[in-house]
Amino acid sequence: MSDLIQTAVGRLLAPGGLGVADLDRAFAQLMTPGIDAADLYFQHSRAESWMLEDGLVKDGSHSIEQGVGVRAISGEKTGFAYSDDIVLPALLDAARAAQAIARAGADAPAHALAPRAGRELYAPIDPIDTLTPEAKVALLREVDAFTRALDPRIQQVIVSIAGSLSTVLVASSDGVLAGDVRPLVRFNVQVIAEQNGRRETGSAGGGGRYGYARFIDAGLAFDFARDAVRQALVNLEAVDAPAGSMTVVLGPGWPGVLLHEAVGHGLEGDFNRKGQSAFANRMGQKVAA
Image 1: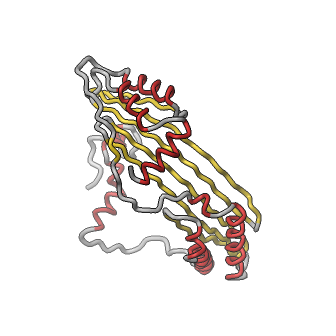
Image 2 (image 1 turned 60 degrees about the horizontal axis):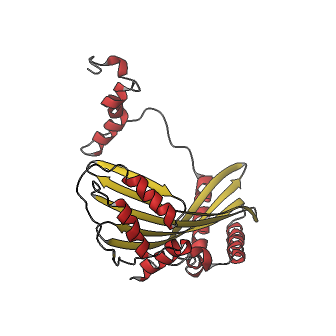
Image 3 (image 1 turned 60 degrees about the vertical axis):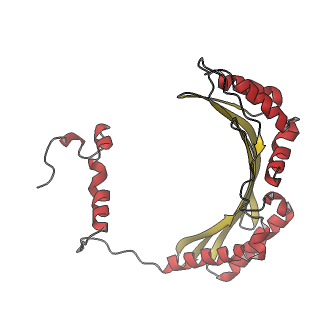
């Protein structure tokens, strides 16, 4: 059994006293006469976010969601059931509900589950635990101070950090057992700059499937701060785009796209059928010379 599957089983099944063998009991309940195929989808998601504004933590959240979805397929019909509780009685109840769509037919027995190793594209870490709450707030404050020091015209800074961990386990009646652990983090910086009574904003951010420490070790958080400030300062010097009648030169290629966006949507059948088009009351009439 791969490390991903072991992690998924330990996080999703073990807390409710379940094991892989119990999934076979669920399939025995599901694969009654008339059911062609079935699968179980377990997921546990944990997420948090922190936001610092004007040097103070203004918002914070933490949430946990989990559950199991059951699907049974009978010909062209599909039955679904769901349970928030990942325990055997609830799993069997969901299996009975999903297979209630069964049509009369021959048995389609489930195959014995066999773990399938997938490609590990990122480390199966819990990013929320890669920094303590105190370290997260300290990072936000450090980026806040760094951002304000970049230019005296920066009047307001909002810095936020967020992370989540999603653990998935999938079992199907054809014998597939697979799991995945998906970390995800993001860091954002938003600034407001003011000059001669004019205020402009700039924002930057990014993230990936790694731990919070990457924002510090690779300097990403400070790169986002620089980019947000750059945007705001460029906006302070920006002038309005020219407006009014202009000469337009069309060539092959994109003009067809521009024409479609200009009038094509209004000529589409769905918009006219719903009466949402400017041409809806001119059906059957000539609209252009």
